[in-house]
Image 1 (cartoon, rainbow, N blue to C red):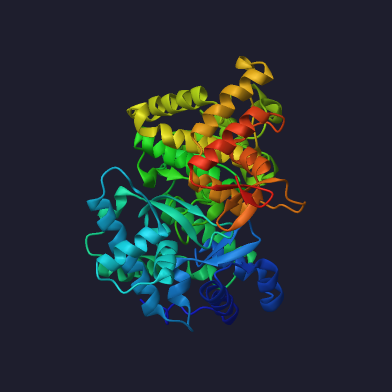
Image 2: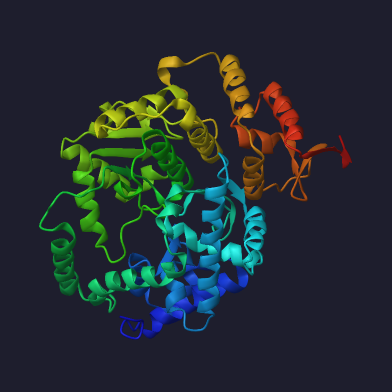
Amino acid sequence: MNKTEMKLQPAEQGMINRVVSRFLTEKRPTPRKELVVDFGEIDLLESLVQRSLLRDINREKYLPSFMSFYFYDAGPVLAVRASLETTLVTLKELFLKSDDVMQFSTAELESKARELGRVTDRDTIWLGLYLAQEFGALGGYQWNTDQTEMISVRVSEHIMRFKDLTKVWDTTVEQRLKWLHASARQIAAPSFSEQTEIAELLGAVQNDHNVPSDVLVFISHSSKDENIVLAFVELLVAALHVPHDTIRCTSVDGYRLPAGANTDQVLKLEVRDSKTFIGLITPNSMNSAYVLFELGARWGAELHMMPVLAGVSSNALSGPLKGLNCIVATSDAQLHQLIGDVGKTLELTVQSPASYTRYLNKLVQEVHRSFGQGVVPSTSVEPTANYVERSGSRKIDNLTRELVISVASKFVWTKQLPKWTVLVEGRELPVRPLVLSAVGALPNDSTTSNSATAKLKTLGFEIRYQGRRA
């Protein structure tokens, strides 16, 4: 089967061409409104996302998927293919030859690719990494704000699954064309009656007449909390060695629904049959109809569930969910408890804390970065000064150069710069707000701010006083 047999409608082809072309030439996503106005096919746009022919960012912007490049009819497919192969070869070599360090910058990848004799430039690695996220080769990564470029990546052991990297492109295309063919009747934006018939057909094929799903861990969440969910998944994999293909979180690449799946029907099955159900409760998920439905469905089935609070208090839950015991995502002790509980439920051995503590710290940092200080567990509330001193110092110890750069890339400062500033990648930013955003300290804690400023110096950042180096 090839793409001539899977011919797209003109509007679908046009939207894919627009998104891929914008991505390749400008390295940025395409706004949803632009696609809706220019093509006028909202249902087809949604269908492209459901079939993994486009990626959406909070239903506001669109990026290409791996198959977008295959169907792109105006671009250098061979160059895209070469970028993927070069990047996978480089990642595999780094995994084989490196000791314990598996985190690499894009510059390090470029340098290694050249050592291997690969013809490469920054765009080769940039595009290759973007594609590699769909192949399970990356154990973690940091995006820029548009999710179009990775700042740094961690190589996953799953890179070893690829025995012949020259065949990865062809094999993957063949598999995904089969998936698309199975849902080909959806491509034509069917009527309501046809949609019902297709849903029944897909349910019979995918669910095998209600045979239980093989998903062990289902994480209910808002797509706006993607970074927190990714950190949470990394923690579970590191602490319990949960197989990647048994985890479902629909907004994280590598853990999404399969191409061609009937979203509502598969989600119903997996919400019901997953051995462990974790609900990530945040200000974003409290406004998500899908999350609330998933929580209610799990509760109504009287099945075990674990609510995890991030940026909200236990009072945010109402009705029957209010009586559930919750885990606070900014509490190290409670996260260790959660890992133990999940391990017992799945009958998996909890690894040594030393092997996963950094992932636990990363999760806590992501929560603080997204929602600030978070919630102090009601069972262990301390006086504010003591709490800030202990928690602030701990977060400062865990402050990394990558975290500061990531925070700085998202930081918006519209006021006049204060006397003390920090130089981050050529951009002057106010020390105090930047540091407090990174470590999640309370804004009235000058001791924490001063300590964090000193930490910035040790990380190699330049601190300036009225434009002069401090």
